[in-house]
Image (cartoon, rainbow, N blue to C red; front, side, top):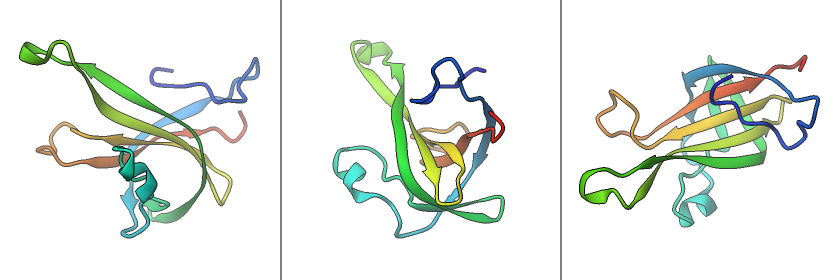
Length: 121
């Protein structure tokens, strides 16, 4: 599956994910400010997806999506997306995505649920 990153415990019995790519609504005041202090987006510790509230129990893995510069900035690489593989207090394993420049948003930053690990995987 495109965009899928193996989990730390994948080994030969790799878990599968379902691509979701739907917006989430972060709960105000729950952002992890320690990540913001390092220049990254503050991961929301509580968010709503499809009308249900989820609480982040822990971060399993993080990575970034990079985009090469162009024109005068060809020598630079820009971090466009941040991914956070998380587990929730209710047992879900999700990948949240932060897109610094989502299409059609006129430069607004946006969080989404990128994928959800299949429970039977």
